[in-house]
Image (cartoon, rainbow, N blue to C red; front, side):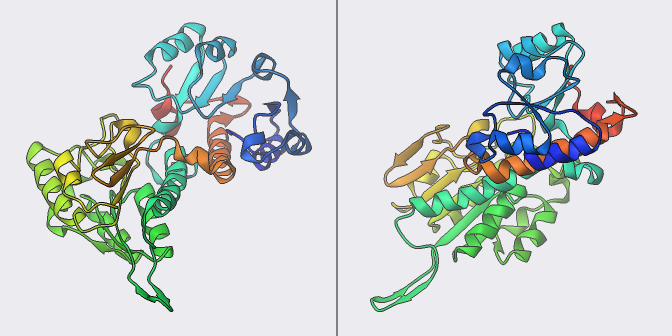
Length: 344
């Protein structure tokens, strides 16, 4: 859900009018009565929701029908995935819709409250650790029982961005022994602050971090060194969570088929980069693959599986973005943040 009742209340207090489609928030735990109580007007369908709108807020990219319904001159705020949705973007352009891609919010301090990717990655990292724990055939924490002691499981998180750090924190809370790897120098301190150990420090490079705090694409030589170090450590793990992604590029391949086949049966891999091609060679997006007893999960849109808090965070991002863009009752995308997001 792109807006929650709390965000609606604040928008209305700011002088805006808000229209919400009936039933839009029900599956996320926000009934129509909550939106009406917040001051929103409820509409029966898409067309009546967006009629006369200056701003249309969505989560996912619009379908062709939705794109055709958005009024000319309106500003669309949603996750657009520009590299994959050329036809819809061209349709929006032809209709005169100003479209801003939420994934293009610049990684600067002033825009942190508008960063949808970070807020949703927080949810995904949390849920990835829970999925992995549920799939394992052993406990994560150490247990002392009448039947003897149970040693803690070993979890390895590859990629220590927002999703990776949340996966580390969650796995630690569940009692696992956690280690992590990232090529960026800032990640080492962040990983260790969460009580996890850092793997292969010798591969960390100051030049590995691109603008906005993302990791840059590695050279072929760097990729080979990373795969070797990761494979050696992964062979001893019970749970592996991969989160490495590079904006605008396919996800880096970190675990090849031979590495997976060398793992112990019962090992679980949760590949959060599945939608971008996967960090694991054998990942199938949206499926669970069994390779000699090693289970590889390729979940898609994990944030949607925790809809209440994912929607709350998304709504606050939209609220902050509207506050940035609307000035003197007009929409201004000429600033540092808005100009970076404009697609049409």
